[in-house]
Image (tube, rainbow, N blue to C red; front, side):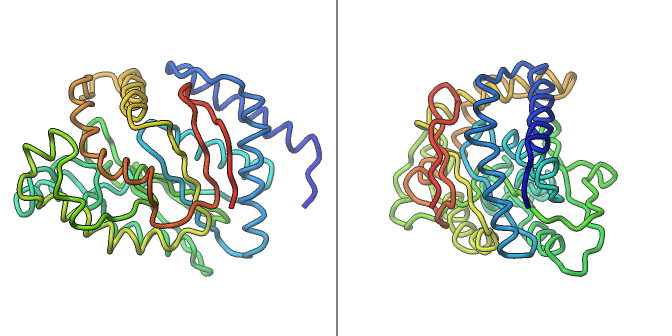
Length: 305
């Protein structure tokens, strides 16, 4: 397929509109044109080439710490793939597959009270996730409904608000903070890395269950990924900083709903800390594309393998 300037300029125009819409909630984007030309368009082109080579639905995994910009990147890649490369694209987050509050409440009673808090492996409905990915990739495609999770109410949206996928997708973009995460050796779990683990997981029941889920159920999901993109932040402190900004944005668009304050965010991040830090060192699948993010929350470099 040959792309003329009109195709690319139209995609870039839609990209600017998308960012302008997000900027109304307080997020400011810099070097927008440069980011499009140097990062987003080349990434979309790489995905397009893989699709043409495989001649089937491609599952793109997008992993990285909280607040790094995975959702925004997913939306931009979807826009470019659709408008420029004319590919039917579906995006969803692993967050949309959180177990319901009642399901997590049961886990908190049977395994560890820490499972009441959504986030870590074990708090997602992996059976549903695998089933939906398989359904989206079927040759004989039928309508698929993808769940949506309401973080402000900490529970799943009712089915009438789920995403309806009517056309068979060429590309599925699956993003999430722990996508591509790898389990640790059992000995590595013994030493607590923060106050939460030290005071509230003394018997390691929470850590061991999370680690087991990564080693088994989540690993099977990650093996389905055709292209893995990993967004690497400079250090863990930026995960906390950018998650605060994310919560601030959520506060603006979710008036009247329960939103975390700074202290609650600090505690919440502790649930994610062990796995996030380990992802800086090791991943369960090798990234096809490694994107380095600088301290100003901008793309610094992209490495393709």
